[in-house]
Amino acid sequence: MTHGLDLVRARIVRAAGRSGRDPGGVRLVIVGKGQDPARLRELYEHGHRDFGENRAQELAAKAEQMPADVVWHFIGPLQSNKVRVIRPVVDFLHSLDRLELATTWMKGPGLAPPAFLQINIGNEPQKQGVSPERAPQVVDALTGLGVPLLGLMAIPPIADDPERSRPYYRKMTDLLADLARSHPHLTELSMGMSDDFEVAVEEGSTCLRVGRAIFASTEH
Image 1: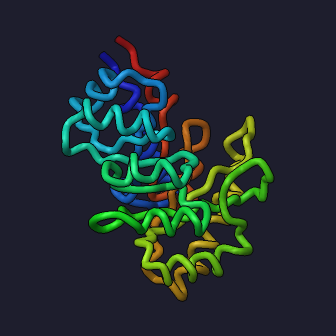
Image 2: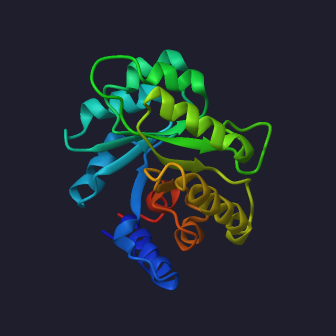
């Protein structure tokens, strides 16, 4: 069996090489949206541990069927009333997009899992996220709330050419650098999906969210 996972990993290594980066600095999150847990277990047996979901109930259900050492990432829009479903399960929240959600995220027993602030880098009205212009103000507020913020996340405008994502990813890298001057704990960039993850690696992504490129390329 040829794993799509191996093919994606190889592409990440090549992209990192083109930009002079260590591929070990890029975390690959396999997005299992709509996939049977058996397929995720197959990837687990192939040595992978980071998995992501964009629906609270689906993540909670799959977490019960997967080994305990899986690292879970929640990557989709999150309603405040669903926080109680995923907070005890996930290791990372990629889609912190508003202060109201942050307040809810900080409630509950134990330490809140680390989060990424979602940036609406294309200023698209239909997308969640904070505008780049408001990011400094929001980061200050999140820091005041005690949110364990790792960095930024973004989904660029849909494009038919991966190169069209590059300017947005470059803006994200610049924004993170600007914010890190006053918030040095911000070091992570969650950006890059199946169609453009190589460009994202070249532009500094530290966390990729890839599903289709892995599952569509797996041959049994």
